[in-house]
Length: 181
Image 1 (cartoon, helix red, strand yellow):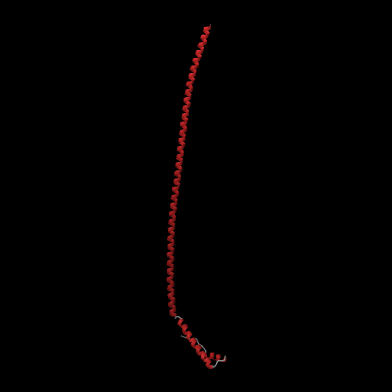
Image 2: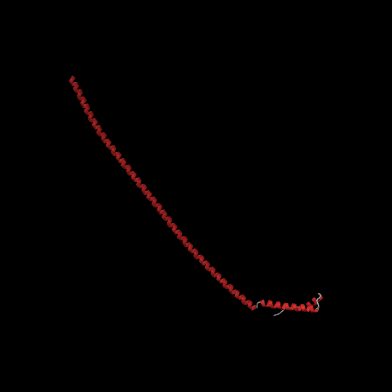
């Protein structure tokens, strides 16, 4: 692995100008060199090689592809479930509409039947009242005819009595006139 270049000589002169001795500057540089080497090893251990990175990316792509397929499959299943539920609801609504229509027709038929029965009852009552009126009229007519007949009979009797009375009175008058004359 290529390590970046570090100018140790220049850094040592910089440290010496700041007041460090040559031995101190070399010790610091060696310590820094060890720290950089250890850090580089730690970092390189954490790093992934290009092939491993490509394998990982490829695995992630496969996982994402599988996940995408599963999500699409779930979406299709959900859509199918929603469609079937929608169809079931439509069928139930149609069934309810049909039942409601039947109930309305049945109710209307019942109302019509009740109305027709009431009409028939009213018609029957009207006919019965008409018949009673006609019977009453017939009785009144019969009574009137009976009264007329009775009055005619009474008239005849009165006429008979009147004729008898007039004839009797005329005979008395004639007898009186004849007796006194």
